[in-house]
Image (tube, rainbow, N blue to C red; front, side):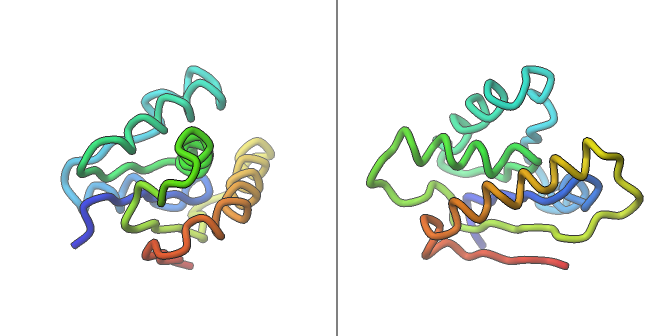
Length: 121
């Protein structure tokens, strides 16, 4: 089993439900009231813990911030789970958020080489 797991995906895709199955986890929702930049900065520091399950829409941006601060270092995660199916209708803001997640994931995927990436549709 992986010790450092990140879970991300579009809104309403089951991130929190999946994270609960691992037991203890941290949710990016707990800091989203601070805006995208600050919240992803905060979440990026969570990757410094030796063991974790972190879930949320801010995971890709937080990984990008961690990468930018730790040039030349491998990714701080063993496994990335990407949930691709939203359950329920999304409003315009949620759809825009999902597209942003996909954009950032496409940017950082080459850096995540060697990480166990599981895409669930």
